[in-house]
Length: 233
Image (cartoon, rainbow, N blue to C red; front, top):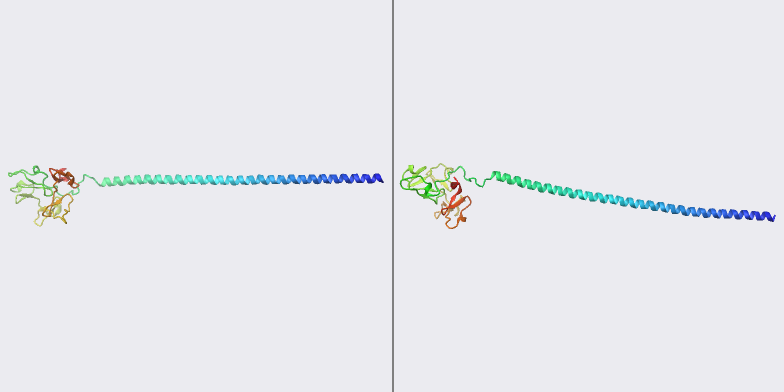
């Protein structure tokens, strides 16, 4: 009987130890499982962080690329605009140059005038004489029409006319049908080549000692501003 009791006690002790061992193993396994779960979570979290970082990097890369693309686009547009501006400027200059010849006669179609110096006048028995102050100049000392290119009137060669376009610039067609000096308005000749006389008529400008007083389109020649259109003829 005593032997049987001892045997039961031994068996029970063994069972208790197995259960304790199993419980310990289970706790250890649970601990390991918990660690594994934590490790997995940590790995996942790390992956998630990496994924977030990768996304951010991708976004940053895209932003950089977009910024670069925008800058490149802006630079290209600015370059194109600059080129277009330069091209437009060149085109405008060419168009302007094509339509404007600085050597062109602003009064083309109207007579040039009679003289710049006395040598320009026709031969006549009384000698050549140029009234250089009259716009376009006029030859004098004529005795008849044969001494003039047009008409001799009271010793002066005149240009006959039916309207102002028949007269050199600075002259107008008078009611008598002869070209005469135009009136100044407020001491200004309507033709910018000329100044005004004491009688308020247009006349050539005296440039004695200062050629710079000659208006554009005229040149100081023998102390009088002469129209380039006549000098260049």
